[in-house]
Image (tube, rainbow, N blue to C red; front, side):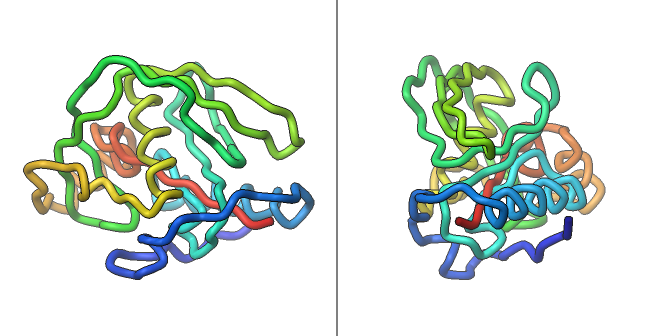
Length: 180
């Protein structure tokens, strides 16, 4: 496994729509492993393909229980309920956070690296993270939806990145990535 370079805003790849994965094989599984290692090294709670320069619909996320590490291929939101405002950050936009309204609960379907179809019901930080990472696959960044975007001191940004209150660098920020 390897730590991959994280693409930073305003790189135009972050605004492009990722393509669906057509074939799941060893190269894609290796990419997902590398993305997970990159996410943990950052540290963050999610990472999407475009964030590592790969325009494929893949994400990794780990917001703790009840799901642990998820490696998802072609994820899509089937249902979304409720609304919550939370602080988000992003590994591709270091040093900034903002308040984002997102669904409080989501149901997502995706393929696993083994090619199995899964359905995930998530709420709270997990719901926020999955929405944040799936947005990345459509070229949407949290700053497009955020209010009160502000710079944060490095110590606060680090706390949020370790599960503070952003998805990706906090419970409200997440990413994803993949290779076919």
